[in-house]
Image (tube, rainbow, N blue to C red; front, side, top):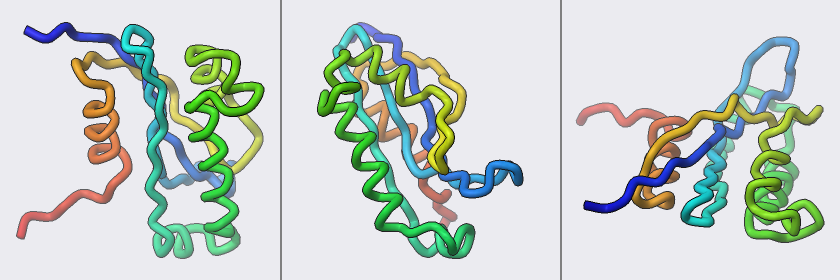
Length: 130
Protein backbone atom coordinates (compact mmCIF):
# COMPACT_ATOMS: atom_id res chain seq x y z
CA UNK A 1 0.00 0.00 0.00
CA UNK A 2 1.40 3.45 -0.92
CA UNK A 3 2.51 5.69 1.91
CA UNK A 4 0.32 8.69 2.61
CA UNK A 5 2.01 12.07 2.91
CA UNK A 6 0.48 15.11 4.56
CA UNK A 7 0.25 18.32 2.59
CA UNK A 8 -0.89 21.90 3.11
CA UNK A 9 -2.66 23.97 0.51
CA UNK A 10 -4.28 27.34 0.00
CA UNK A 11 -6.66 28.52 -2.70
CA UNK A 12 -5.42 31.54 -4.68
CA UNK A 13 -8.10 34.21 -5.06
CA UNK A 14 -8.53 37.46 -6.96
CA UNK A 15 -10.23 40.02 -4.70
CA UNK A 16 -10.17 43.38 -6.49
CA UNK A 17 -12.33 45.14 -3.92
CA UNK A 18 -11.48 43.72 -0.50
CA UNK A 19 -14.13 45.70 1.36
CA UNK A 20 -16.87 43.94 -0.63
CA UNK A 21 -15.61 40.51 0.40
CA UNK A 22 -15.97 39.15 -3.14
CA UNK A 23 -13.40 37.02 -4.92
CA UNK A 24 -12.82 34.50 -7.70
CA UNK A 25 -10.77 31.35 -7.08
CA UNK A 26 -8.00 31.22 -9.70
CA UNK A 27 -5.53 28.66 -8.39
CA UNK A 28 -4.07 26.44 -5.69
CA UNK A 29 -0.68 26.35 -3.95
CA UNK A 30 0.25 22.93 -2.53
CA UNK A 31 3.20 22.09 -0.26
CA UNK A 32 4.12 18.50 0.67
CA UNK A 33 7.22 18.55 2.88
CA UNK A 34 7.90 14.79 2.91
CA UNK A 35 7.89 14.60 -0.89
CA UNK A 36 9.74 17.94 -1.29
CA UNK A 37 6.93 19.27 -3.45
CA UNK A 38 5.84 22.88 -3.81
CA UNK A 39 3.74 23.92 -6.78
CA UNK A 40 1.11 26.40 -7.80
CA UNK A 41 -1.36 25.92 -10.60
CA UNK A 42 -3.68 28.64 -11.87
CA UNK A 43 -6.46 28.98 -14.42
CA UNK A 44 -7.99 32.40 -15.00
CA UNK A 45 -11.34 32.52 -16.80
CA UNK A 46 -10.83 35.88 -18.53
CA UNK A 47 -14.51 36.32 -19.45
CA UNK A 48 -15.57 35.66 -15.87
CA UNK A 49 -12.88 38.04 -14.62
CA UNK A 50 -14.07 40.78 -17.00
CA UNK A 51 -17.64 40.37 -15.78
CA UNK A 52 -16.58 40.35 -12.14
CA UNK A 53 -13.85 43.00 -12.18
CA UNK A 54 -13.58 44.88 -15.49
CA UNK A 55 -10.93 47.17 -13.99
CA UNK A 56 -8.45 44.27 -13.60
CA UNK A 57 -6.00 43.83 -16.47
CA UNK A 58 -5.90 40.06 -17.20
CA UNK A 59 -2.35 40.24 -18.59
CA UNK A 60 -1.05 42.04 -15.51
CA UNK A 61 -2.85 39.53 -13.26
CA UNK A 62 -1.27 36.63 -15.19
CA UNK A 63 2.16 38.23 -14.79
CA UNK A 64 1.72 38.45 -11.01
CA UNK A 65 0.48 34.86 -10.82
CA UNK A 66 3.47 33.74 -12.90
CA UNK A 67 5.87 35.41 -10.46
CA UNK A 68 4.20 33.45 -7.65
CA UNK A 69 4.61 30.20 -9.63
CA UNK A 70 8.29 31.01 -10.11
CA UNK A 71 8.73 31.40 -6.34
CA UNK A 72 7.43 27.84 -6.00
CA UNK A 73 10.18 26.76 -8.40
CA UNK A 74 12.87 28.39 -6.26
CA UNK A 75 13.35 31.54 -8.35
CA UNK A 76 14.32 34.83 -6.70
CA UNK A 77 15.29 35.70 -3.13
CA UNK A 78 12.05 34.36 -1.62
CA UNK A 79 12.23 31.17 -3.68
CA UNK A 80 15.81 30.66 -2.53
CA UNK A 81 14.68 30.47 1.11
CA UNK A 82 13.41 26.91 0.66
CA UNK A 83 10.04 25.33 0.02
CA UNK A 84 8.53 25.71 3.50
CA UNK A 85 9.53 29.36 3.80
CA UNK A 86 8.36 30.11 0.26
CA UNK A 87 4.98 28.46 0.93
CA UNK A 88 4.48 30.44 4.13
CA UNK A 89 5.50 33.68 2.41
CA UNK A 90 3.07 33.01 -0.47
CA UNK A 91 0.11 32.32 1.82
CA UNK A 92 0.80 35.24 4.18
CA UNK A 93 -1.58 38.21 3.89
CA UNK A 94 -0.50 40.81 1.34
CA UNK A 95 -2.13 44.09 0.37
CA UNK A 96 -2.70 43.21 -3.29
CA UNK A 97 -5.70 41.97 -5.24
CA UNK A 98 -4.25 38.44 -5.05
CA UNK A 99 -5.11 36.73 -1.77
CA UNK A 100 -5.03 33.17 -0.47
CA UNK A 101 -7.53 31.24 1.58
CA UNK A 102 -6.66 29.98 5.03
CA UNK A 103 -4.26 27.02 4.85
CA UNK A 104 -5.87 23.58 4.87
CA UNK A 105 -4.31 20.12 5.14
CA UNK A 106 -4.82 16.78 3.49
CA UNK A 107 -3.22 13.40 2.80
CA UNK A 108 -2.05 12.07 -0.55
CA UNK A 109 0.22 9.56 -2.23
CA UNK A 110 0.89 11.85 -5.20
CA UNK A 111 0.97 15.63 -4.58
CA UNK A 112 0.64 16.42 -8.30
CA UNK A 113 -2.57 14.39 -8.40
CA UNK A 114 -3.81 16.10 -5.21
CA UNK A 115 -3.13 19.49 -6.80
CA UNK A 116 -5.13 18.52 -9.89
CA UNK A 117 -7.99 17.28 -7.67
CA UNK A 118 -8.04 20.58 -5.76
CA UNK A 119 -8.04 22.57 -9.01
CA UNK A 120 -11.06 20.60 -10.21
CA UNK A 121 -12.97 21.00 -6.95
CA UNK A 122 -11.96 24.51 -5.89
CA UNK A 123 -11.19 26.50 -9.05
CA UNK A 124 -12.79 25.08 -12.19
CA UNK A 125 -16.52 25.61 -12.75
CA UNK A 126 -18.62 22.55 -11.91
CA UNK A 127 -19.44 20.35 -14.88
CA UNK A 128 -23.15 19.85 -15.36
CA UNK A 129 -24.36 16.38 -16.38
CA UNK A 130 -25.07 16.07 -20.10
